[in-house]
Length: 213
Image 1 (cartoon, one colour):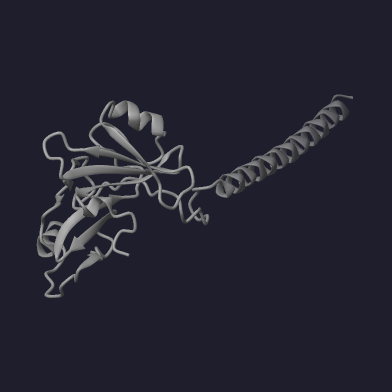
Image 2 (cartoon, rainbow, N blue to C red; image 1 turned 30 degrees about the vertical axis):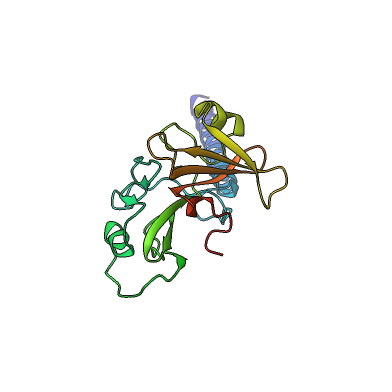
């Protein structure tokens, strides 16, 4: 009887172990499946690695200190090392670009070869204005692309001249003159609600709504 009982107990133990092993394999399979589903869902989110995100999304601020716009230094006549009044050669040097003997003509934008997110207007081979179209770059007062018009008006209280936008219905040009030199201005363009771009530079070029067109 003892032998029979032992055999019965051994068989029961083996059966339980088999069932437990099966549960463990199945549980692991479920965990692996859940992890795969989670990874797939994560990859579908905008901005995930390997996913084609919106090409128009504003890029993150660069951590490369060699870029002209990596510093927050900005005023009515300069952004970082780029300064209104520089020659085209000096602007290239500030960006770490090789010298060039080519002249810019009456009006053009410097091809920075991807070294700067600032658009540099050259007039007769001299920097006349600097255009900002990147929301990561703010003015000293803290205004940036995407801000509401009301915020710009509050930050530059009593100093803003508002004009209707020439091409955007309901849009405006919010113009702020330098307190020390009225020939240099900061011009915000809006869609009537929010800032879409801004620029700093000398007059009259900073007021040219078509740029070099």
